[in-house]
Length: 319
Image 1 (cartoon, helix red, strand yellow):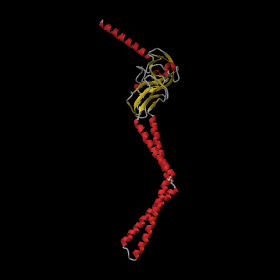
Image 2 (tube, one colour):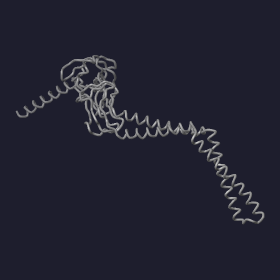
Image 3 (cartoon, rainbow, N blue to C red):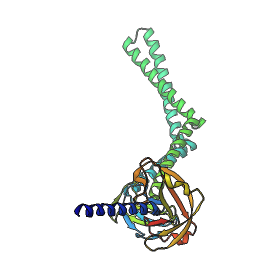
Image 4 (cartoon, rainbow, N blue to C red):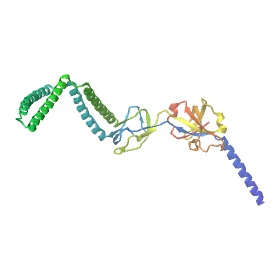
């Protein structure tokens, strides 16, 4: 009797398991609601002075999201401005050449050195005559000759300097000064651009999901400060095994149902691609054999106004 009851029990369990397997095979694919993700990060490092938006808010392109304090950039602007002023003055000086005061000073210097040179020549002639008559020692004669050479060198230098001023500043010197001025202006422009980056501006529309830092905290360059979704970018992902993929084709219209509110939607299959990682599977407990390839179906809703209110990662059944 006992053996008979055990046999009946095993038979019932077998039938129940068969029914469960049959139900699993007939189970409709269940996927996830997704939206395109976007984030905004500062280009410069600074401390957050103010955050102008809040989580859950939808911002528009061009909206100011936050302001940073970047004192280092302010210091760079001051340094760059000083370099621009100095380089511009050097460039102007090179273009204008010597001033009238500088020219008068140079002419006076020329006159004085010329007189010294002429006097040194006369002194050398007298000393030369006395040396020939043995009235001067060789040492004294050599000293007067050295003074003549020194006076000549100073005179030649001032003649060359005066000639350079009269001809004007060399073209190469003007170009060098202009290049230095241009380089300084570029550094100032770069500093001003960096200073303008203290404001974090939305580059496109966004539904803010999370704000990573609070006022007073340090935001580093490139760190994602605002994270969220692009509005009206809702789509649905389903995981289909190879054994069932023949029912679906690119461009096919399909019907879906949102699990949490039972709302029905229609959409078009945008693409079908093979999944290479098990971690990418979106359908819960997909029924497939180990030898089957796994494919992902992306569906774009026809009515985006109706779909955009669906919560991200909400379960959706593919009918």
